[in-house]
Image (spheres, rainbow, N blue to C red):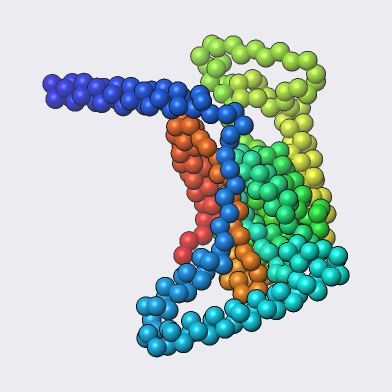
Length: 359
């Protein structure tokens, strides 16, 4: 017992020290952020993926080829680049003459803008997506393409509705939009994916789950057992239906279910609008399909990973990865880390609850 008491005191001291340290760091971070401008939320970062692909290939060739062969390949590449540059200049002059613009303003090569969306329950990445789409739309034309890597098991209806609307801004400008699903685009994630002109899926990526779910625990019986009254006052017949602490009636449950059904109808209409080839009655059952099976029901257009697709584009297009990087305070970073852990646990639960399939 004495050992346990001493251990408890030691543990309390450690916890107190850690909490005090976090509070101190928080104060320092808050003081440091006072001088920042309120609008200075972050910035756009652009990475040329062509350079990354070339660097990887050069590194591998340097290790695998002998010096003479490597030297000859470099000569051939330089010769090919000069020839391509001449071809581009001729094409630029021709297009400039047709459009009555200076050659420098005439596009000579397709541009592919790559965005990433990793969705949580609240679709928190929507704010970054909004900034990225705005940046791309300031430059992209109908001869370019936007590729979005979507990874999400869905979440709040209104949040993913807004995320889908951000992607719709691209297609409304007649700019080709391709969504790549390497792992999962289900429920709200598929709501985003279906906006695209083309959906690419890895062979075992998860798509579908076109349905709506709501779960509400009710503690009314527990409150009654402990003689605790719960009162709620509303104005409007359906201001509150199913609650966590009140006694739910059949009328409440029926209204709540009707609201879910109406949301499901809106979801189905949205998918049908963007993918008219889909038999919505067949796929809007809440089920999920793996990539190969998703092709059979027209939920995806091609079996291909995002890496494969971009590598194929590499020789003939300039590929740019666009990301909006937010500046965050220390408390925000800690909160995001905690939220990320929760979201990973929820995603794991979702995967087990929906398919429970393992290799």
